[in-house]
Amino acid sequence: MLKNYLLIAWRIALQRKLFTVINLLCISLTLLVLLVLTALLENTFAPTGVEGKSPRMLQIVTMVSLNEEKGNFRHGPLGYKVITDYIKPLPSAELVAAVSMPESASVYQQGRITDLLLRRADAAYWQILDFEVLDGRVPTAEDVAAGRFVLVLNQSTATQLFGKQSAVGQQLNVGGQQFTVIGVVADVLQLNSFADMWAPVSTYPSSDYQHQLWGNFSALILARSAADFPALRQELATAVAGFKFDDPLKWQEAKIWADSKLEFFARMLLQNQTEPESGAASLLLLISLLMLLFMLLPALNLVNLNTGRMMERSTEIGVRKAFGASRQQLIGQFLVENLLLCCVGGLLGLAMAAGTLELIEQSGVIPYLQVEINLTVFALGMVISMVFGLLSGIIPAWRIAKLDPVHALKGARR
Amino acid sequence: MIKLSAISKNYQTDKVQTRALDNINLQVQAGEFVSIMGPSGCGKSTLLNIIGLLDRPASGQIEINGQLLGKYSDSQVAKLRNQTFGFIFQSFHLINELRVIDNVELPLLYRKMPAAERRAKAKAALEKVGLTARMEHFPNQLSGGQQQRVAIARAMVGEPQILLADEPTGNLDSQMGAEVMSQLLALNQAGTTIVMVTHNEQEAKHSNRIVRVFDGQLVQ
Ligand SMILES: Nc1ncnc2c1ncn2[C@@H]1O[C@H](COP(=O)(O)OP(=O)(O)O)[C@@H](O)[C@H]1O
Ligand SMILES: [Mg+2]
Image (cartoon, rainbow over all chains, first blue to last red):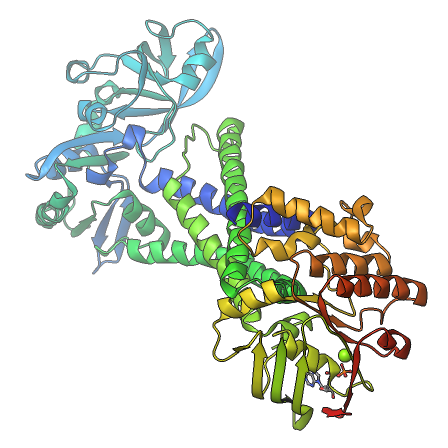
């Protein structure tokens, strides 16, 4: 019987080309957008690879300095001293890294000047993040302690500067300082690891940065597990309560929040800089709502289309009943037809999403992007389109199949 | 073979209630060819549909092969429709998305039968109505007469005991109508019981018996 159903479904799909195409497009395009979107979101909020330790990692990207009485407010990246004095000593932190935001740096090479993004990091940075080392090595604690002028490039930069030659061992003038390239890592686009080049923090021309409360640094805090986050935040709050400003008359209070990636983006988007609550829940809700809304449109369209189509097919249902189809058999037939359409549409959507992501990665619209399709979201999308397919195909079919054949033959209106 | 006792049927449309059938008693014997005649709207189709279990009466009893139809389940009724009856409709009611051969095969889909056997039987039925050459066509590529012959093949493919035909020639010109009639007569000769609704006195003359309906009631 199943073979029969499949055959009928196939014939009907072929005969009703427009309907089939619209239906397939509806399902596959919805899935396509959904998959691409979640792939990008997931890459941002829960990355694998370089920042794969994200589930037990918190980051502090900015701090707020306040004096409410005087109306003073300052919001920006951390100074290195904040990290060494207040964050590195937190007992629940397994490891704390300091890394500068990517700074534009001019690279002089054979008379050419290239502007590239440079980060300066301490040794812990290379332990917390799992860079994929393609050639050479990354800086060690010794390199950092000794202030060695060693440089790591990402793959694209290495190719851009040195072509097919090995970059490791090459000399490079960055912003007037002479560096030796010691390693090449894979390209990556992520909050803390995005850059073209990396150097030890100790290579700053001046050591002033060590004494600054305001600077250009982020802190990465690795906890033993996510379960330690509350304790970590508690300790941070205690430490920050005793924050000592250089100018205590001008500044009274510091606000520093250790955030997960989602919390960080939520705080940024929702501008919750002065409260501990980042608004991550609201952001998630918003994203989910938008996605649902986005799915709803084609879904309703599909329901409409399918229902109308079912009404058109009421004669067919009547004929089948008249010649001995039971209600069960009819439902079986339409179930198979719908599932087939959903599966084909789903696979099409999956293939299109994979193609689109590949295209985005290669086009370089978003530099160093590397994303993967989330199969959970794919499964969810399939389930949703099946539910809608079933609602729209099976419910009307069921209602018509319940009628006596004459009424179905006359075209069911009620 | 078929026994209807005190069958009534009403239709409720908005505020008007139509009594389509009123206390009908009718028996059809095996091998008979019965014509049902009467003016338009008198309840002929309703009667035929109730005989063929396509519609349910408001009251009354139906006996088929000595079996009283009480509270039959959906699948039991489906089986009866499949094995006992074959239908021919005035407007053919072929499935346009399916090829002729698949249309003819349709009743066999609802039996346990290997695909090859189904195909063979459908071919044989099409051969009887002289349409083997049109097997791979779609219904809307055929003339009305050809479509009705496909419908006859479909009605006969499962070798039902009773053939029910509702104005089978109503949508056909006289020559095509005559062709269809001769095929029905051949089937009756081969032992199939036929109940046919018709407006055509000429056609009705071929049958063993004419039942006349007027305003939902049988007239003798
Ligand atoms: N589905 C329906 N809803 C309402 N009235 C109907 C319906 N089907 C038939 N009728 C009415 O029942 C009566 C008998 O109809 P029908 O059996 O089709 O007549 P005939 O086939 O003799 O022309 C007519 O008055 C018709 O209007
Ligand atoms: Mg009629």
